[in-house]
Length: 466
Image (cartoon, rainbow, N blue to C red; front, top):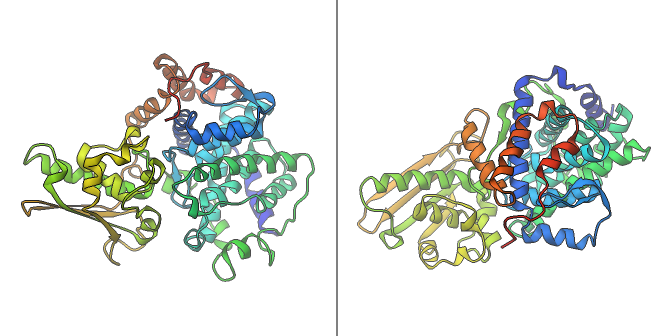
């Protein structure tokens, strides 16, 4: 049996009524997080430009988040997918090694608006896509990631295709075709991190995965062997000897990846690879403030940050040259956390990265890979930080995993709701934010995704792009 058919057999067999309640609960958290970050990113420049380039997309059933405009499902998936990732505040999967819900939710919501489906169907389809994307990650990573592909998009398109195939109730043949077709729609390289093209990766794979499912539903064809073919996905994207297809299907769903290790939820609107270092910086700031007045940059002689070589490859940006660049600068995020006790939207917008006191500290902030053995084997998310003051005193903090990194150390419900409210408030008035949150909480009772997105509509977004 081909890989595409192995996927299809499992995708079609998954049912909401046999899924663990915990899986559906985590899927709802993913919906809350994704709706929030999509609203927050709806009027960012990258999102706006994508919509403008579509040149007045045709009217349809699907909401453009942050507005009351409705367009076709593929265009909505592209625009809203870009918005979901533009602030780099969306959740990620530890196994796929990329962002998951931001790729799937915009496509699933658009599919529901255009073709019908319930809130429970949406949650279940998200669980299915999460599993498919994560399982593919087991088979191709870490070589796939280290080679330079952006798994959020190159693997995310399969998560979207699987989720949409399940949501649209494709049969096994159609689902296999959608997954095989997605091999030709996978794209995205890490060279474009720190630019508008990175969130476009999410928009394009949301559109591509949904398109694959829709085309397959209409009888479009693809090569069932498109994964394992000598010129197929595995050999082209990874290369011979750098993947293990057996790992994809071994113990499928035992447990479901959305349950354990679960998704990584961000506390800060910057690259997840900086978060452990930010946590360490906040820890050190607390240590110092217990002993003296709030920190001034001039009091800090040197900052040393150690993160994994894998993470540092795209976050070692000593002097960021743009607000987008700053999101991926571990030095900048650490400096902000030390000086201000937080990293928030305003720190990553406009010319905040040029603020003199921060630039001054950046000159004394150094990032290097941590030594082998500094953390447990396979830990690529930990960080260690040492801050030396001008008077010679040194403070150190070591974080094995940032809060929210796995389902075992989750951000609290209150913390997730606070994040949602701060994100949604950038596009909606406070009263509407609460209505949207309530609609998400009751999503299992929702029989129409179109009714759900009606709650999100807004005529005049509160905040324009910076």
